[in-house]
Length: 381
Image 1 (cartoon, rainbow, N blue to C red):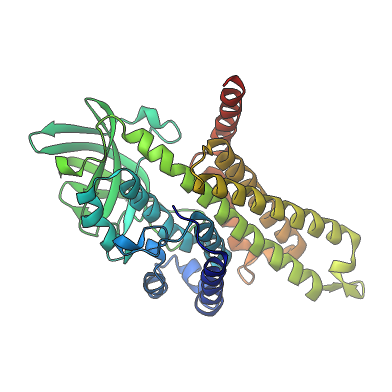
Image 2: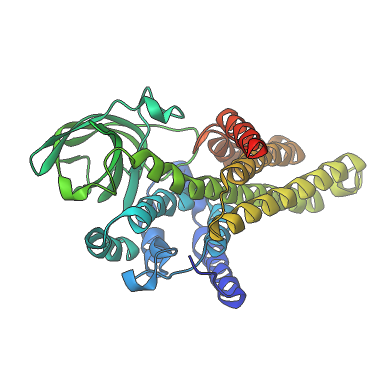
């Protein structure tokens, strides 16, 4: 991935910031509380090229780098964290094809994914295999020029609207990655949406359980070598963890800005509450941790972009930024007092959205193990 020049990066991030302020901020509460898919907003995201932001121009994408991507993700999450979900799993699926697919797969799939005509998703987790990805039981059995797939996948973001899914399934050789092409909707071939999962936050975007019953996939849709699919997916999930960190920075920044503004607007005892030392200490800690989260996220993105190993750095960024976002959302609610618990202010939404980053793309307990094992492995090299 070639580095994007700083001017282009800044221009892209500023464009998304203006888009969020103009098109998202005025309507986010309406869509959020109705748990409604924001079709018009997503169409605008397509026209801006956000669904192909990291895909090379030769395949119809913008060809921008990871630092630009995390800047865009932060801005989208600042406005409404759900918007980043529309492009994250889509980008993960596209990157799997870009990094490990063959020329035919890239030429056939990536242009339509870049335009947003085909939405992407990741079909990895299962009811009994979340962070423990090696416990995957979904099977794909070779039958001539096809694979026959049976199993259940959980926590599939964009599952209903996706046309291209990167599927992790167990084959004779081990866990393989297959590209599933389907018609958007709750049923396509041997695939059905068995459950639409209601969530605490992360509204407006579907998270579903999908069942595969004798679903046939052309053997030509195998990504790379059979049995090596989990390695392909985990490699790209480093980008997913950096994405989660960037989302957390966006949510944390929104919480801090809301708290800072309220501290100036709300008066008690004849002066703004921001002039009370108790509030000032909260604001100082919030700003410091937010900046640390941003720098960790940027550091991990820089290493990944440079082609360096960054499992530890991505884990650190995801761990710290997500915990920080939850802490900042909580502190913002405390600074707001009673009104922060109501739907009249944005902090209650931020408070509901923040826990997703602690759990998503591997729980923070798993991140701590990844970090520790990575550090020990590096020390023994």
